[in-house]
Each structure stands twice: as structure tokens, then as C-alpha cells.
Length: 371
Image 1: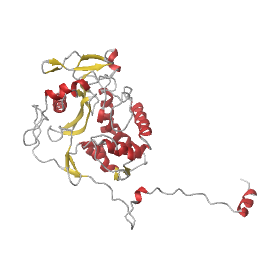
Image 2: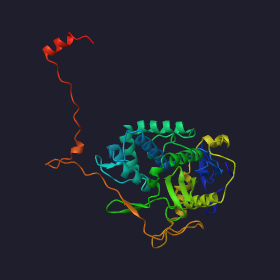
Image 3: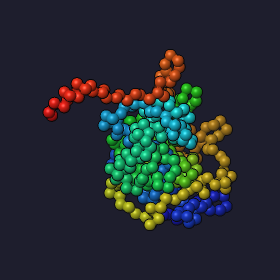
Image 4: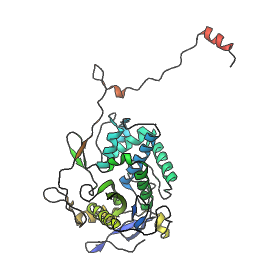
């Protein structure tokens, strides 16, 4: 792993690998030309990392695969289960029993990154969160994401839920090749819930030339993650940035890597041919909690990256201020089905048909039948 030491105020920020305190380093990254598969830059691409909400890219991919196989449609109702409703933020706060279409659920996942909706998607499509994780891992294996393992559909932390920058690049490139018809979910500027406009957490959208995706992620152990995508003159480039110490830094880092990527050609390295490299510690995920969520880290800088008017300030020569209010797409729950007494019929289980009991005469006749 690189030796870059991140300084925080007058001292070093520390993280933990296998319980040993070490100086924090900037996280892994990789930048790839989607059209050619050419690697434009990379650092520590095989280092194990916690994906946080970047997990929702795999959740969406599994859903897309199920749509293409005819198992579901974008109109499939996603039911908010009791378990899903209890998931911690970021969340929509929908009540258990409420429903929304998969189409709206995907919009919410990519903009709001709602953990409750992601869990509902997993439980609805997979039968349970655990069964959906089996589907996620099966797709990861099929794609050759051999450094990844998924435990849930939303990315909430588990030591056994991990990936690598290289694997996320494999997934992202595959998604953009296989499902171009669904890429509009990843560049939505905002969603409108009817009483609130929620802007996309991805600060590249509307602020970096050609930005068209894809997803942010954060839990304390992961640091600030971002899968960024941009297209210029028909050339699509994606970058994976993991483990940044600040929310705004993941965006400026991604912008820098994308901008330099558009200036780069002919490296001779491809994502498909890239072989594992790095020290033995690459298979042990770094825990960024002390660097980003400790009391010391919180006290060092409370700035949220916005000016007095609430506009995001871009500390990057490659980004600019959004020159319009975010264009919001409306999302809503499906109307509840009620009877004349106002009882929500969606909460009443559908009766399972029982086989008819055969009469004595029927049984006697059946006994004479030879199959």
C-alpha cells in the first residue's frame, strides 16, 4: 500500500488494519475507459475495502438482470417490510406495509441512497435479505469480482461485506455495457417526494462536464466513497474513489481522475488483463472510523462544503457551481388499497387455495384409474 500519510491538523490520522494502528493513507482508486476497457490510472486497486452504499450498484444490477429475464418489471411493487422500515439512515421513513414501484425505488436508491428502500428491494426480489445477498454474490462470481463479498442489499457495515476498486470497476463497466437503457437512473439531479426536494449526494452531477453517474457511499469504516462517470465526445470514463476523509474530497478527487483520464490514451493496460498485486495486507480491509468519525475528526472541521446560501463550494479546477436548481423527478408510494371501512387491504394476506376434498364416489372412481 502507498506510504502517503494523511495529516490532520498537527498530527497523523490513524486507522486500523487487523487491530494494528497505522497512519491513514488515501484510499484505492482506478479509472477506466468504458469503451475500450483500458485502465487510465490506478492505485491499490486490489486492496479490500468496505463499499458502503456503493453496494446499491450491485443491488440495481441484480434487479436489471431479473427484469431482462422476465421475472419482474419496473412496475413490480416493492413492499416495505417491518425489517426494512427499521433500517437506519439514510432512509425515506416509509411505514411498514407501504409499497412503491421498482422504478421509483431505483430512483430513490441512486439519489437518496435510502437504506430502508434498498432492504425492501432485496426482500421483495430475493424473498429475504439473505437470499438476495446470495444472488448478489452469484453475480459477483459470474463477473469475476473475486475480491468481493456481499451480506446485504444496502451496504450497512459488516466485516464480511467488502469489495475492491478493481471489482467495482468491473461491475460499473459491465452495467454500462449491458444495460445502457437503465443508465438514466444514475444521473438524476434530485428527487421530489411531494414535500421535499432531495438533491443527489453525487456532487459531480451538474458540476463536472459530462458527468452522468454513478453512486456515493459512506459508513465510518469505509470513509467517503464514490463511483463517478462522465461522457465527453462519445467517450465514457468511470472512476472509483474509495476511503476519502471528507465528503467534498471524494468528489474533487473523482473529478481530477476523470479529467486526467480524458487526457490519457494508450496505456496498454486493460481491466480484463489486470492481475492482482499489492502486499499481503491487501486482503484485510482498512477501518477508517478513527479518521472520519472520531471526536477528534469531528472537532477538526465542521464545514459541510457549502457557502452561506447553501450552494456547494467546489475546491477543484475541474468542477463548477451548478447554474440551476436541481431538476427533480417525482417519486411516490403506490396508493394503499382500502375497503369501505378504510382497512388497508395490502395488509391482509392473500388466502392460499385449498384442494377440494374428494367424495367417496370420486375416490372410488380414482382408484380404478390407471396412469
